[in-house]
Image: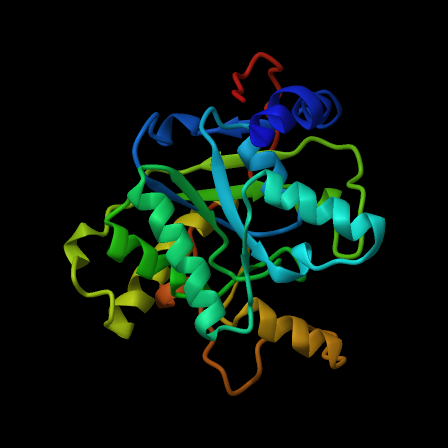
Length: 266
């Protein structure tokens, strides 16, 4: 109930009015049945705008810190995240991360939509980073299709460190579903998991037009924090233009529609 009140009555109408969000490819999201929405992750507001534009309820996993903040701001954030169904995940890995993925799997088994950011954390610089294989495990264990999504402009509206996003149009592009049923029963094969993850990340890259960096975003953030200003992969790491060593797709970053009559839902 809280989810729909926030979307339809309190927060949703205001976001529509102020940011005029746009979406392309929403017809690729099934009207019923389980599906995994795998998105790039540019800003905190990704988790607000994508669900806003869909007719169906979409639940993401979110970092544990969103639920453990102190003070008024921390309590409000935690309450909002719980209200919209966000599933807390300990990004340190191990049993805590496994529990979050199991929660997502149960949601898929119930025929619902589940959102995940394969990069594991927000991009530090707007580029697309190496995907973690949790999304592949979910896809193979659940049998649900993976729908790639590209968020557009959220990093410009809300760069790291900014709380209130600046006013500008926010967009998203939804790709065609990816079917990995050919790998059924192979969810414990790490090479298959990496291959599936790279295919998903390539699809996201093909929608977003982002430059790809073949390291984990968390690793890159640690390098930046340590003073590595150029934010490039280490010289000892292989360079690749796109996930899985593929050539980079010839795609430009999508732009907002010129025609205000372009349909949007939500």
